[in-house]
Length: 315
Image (cartoon, rainbow, N blue to C red; front, top):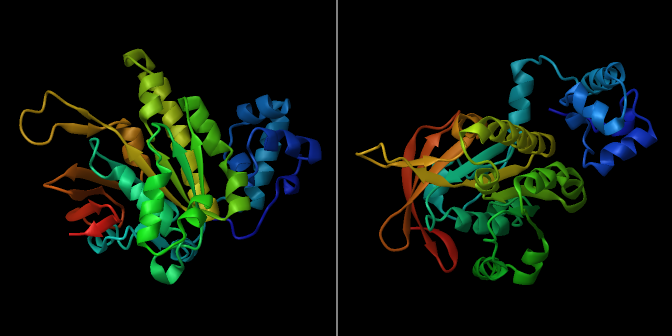
């Protein structure tokens, strides 16, 4: 809940040289310093534990990180906006669209429409506010080589937008490992500030974490790393009032004999950290079914939408 713009140099103990070191590793936001562990700053800045603690304490005091009255929390949440999905039914299920200051997760089997929703959002976020957009641009982190510019152009054309202009406002990075993916998100602050970013898409969030950490012995470090990654995404959403949309893979649970055997990857860490959890599944033809599995302020419900050549639409 940052009301005033605080720079790294405003933090007691951080001069131009230390600020430069932080910037080199992708830390440009004082909030990141405020929520860091002393050990992290000790390593990055090559300082003592006492100095690191003083810097963190100073950052927290500047950002007024502590208890606030609920009316201030309400005022902050009132600043949240929503991006339309181009399906009224899906928007209604989401409480009006994909919300800023929140992480919206869509998990599904392949071909269920989760990446297609991402394509639609990357176009819609650029629209004016009165047309369901945020007059902003998009960061897309691609971990599965699924980003297709031609699909974005097709959707943009259907909305009456200039396809080439829309593509120029989507900044894509291919993530090759979980470490690379974490690095891209940690470096995103500068991109967000310089390019009016209002939406970050990670497609998919868990793919590299599954491949880089295999076996039961690797589960704990994987979940710890994923947890920190999600907290970084949430900090970006809160600090810059932008929306986070992540897709997630599913795995089949053979122990379930009746009902749907699919389970989202990421376990309790992702279940607790995602603000809104959507489960998508295929239906007949181009129809898809979306179910709201978890939300702090919305009821559990379902809706039907379809994926057309023009993008996401109502049935």
